[in-house]
Length: 372
Image (cartoon, rainbow, N blue to C red; front, side):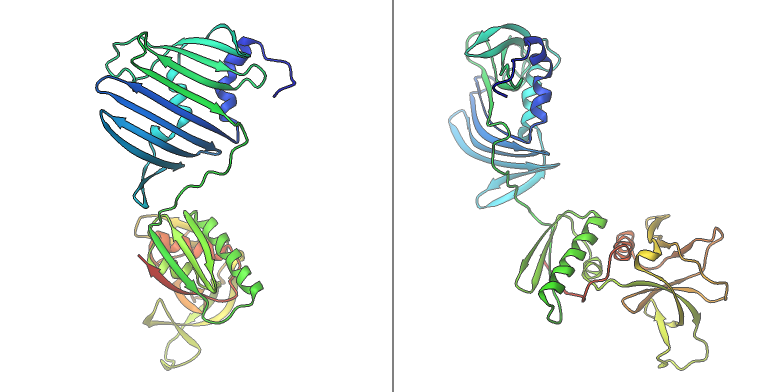
């Protein structure tokens, strides 16, 4: 910061790049040209924002062909603009400005050579394969550091002839705008309540939905259009998982008794898992939602179960897992006394039910439509 005493040259050099990584944002320009193995020239400007969002805009000339390049990056994803669309790929070094800059001098000594235009100047022997892929050139580097903030403001590398040059300029520290990254969903879900909800009820439903998504750890974007919620998911999910997510989500465990000799149309008995041969009468509620402490027990890929922490009285009857009035599964405690419900779907299905059990029920369920 201006107004504070300048750092000593050795202090500024020792922590320059580490200080840069701690900034909330900064802008940069990166340019380079070389004639080997063929003529190439690149010019980019961009912005970096914590934790690791970056935008890159510029051009690339290879021999005589010039192309415009637009890149965005966040986390492990990188987006390249193709026409009016964005193509998502795995993120590479080309959208990691900190790694590119540090790579020029990593492992090299920074030798203080003086002060020019109010900046500390440091010399280093540069290592830039992009300029010298055959490692036959000797590249010299200069780092310029602001003595007051201790932040690097310029890196410059070149060979002795100027046929290969590379420059990174840094500025507008903590003063940039937000970096907007495109989102290419793998799946889109439209959800609409079957009955009109009040504004407060709709808002409560959205809040609970976000809690469930946070519990599941799904990569998503959510927006509202009138009475319709549009959920964009970064990974494909099954229709059943989407329906569970938007269900009312009342999860209960009941003490039950098997229905024997009762008429099939008896209102007292319910089918377990949709199996007409397995009918049970719900006798007493043992616990619901957060009382259940529902966790996923994935003993094998095809044998995921929901473990709950309620105790089943020793009456000979089963415990019954009920979700929104439907009996999903019946179980007895295992030899360790654990109550595990199996045969309710894949591991992701079980995780969805566990998420429902740790959040409040919605004011209403939503009708779901899957869009490609």
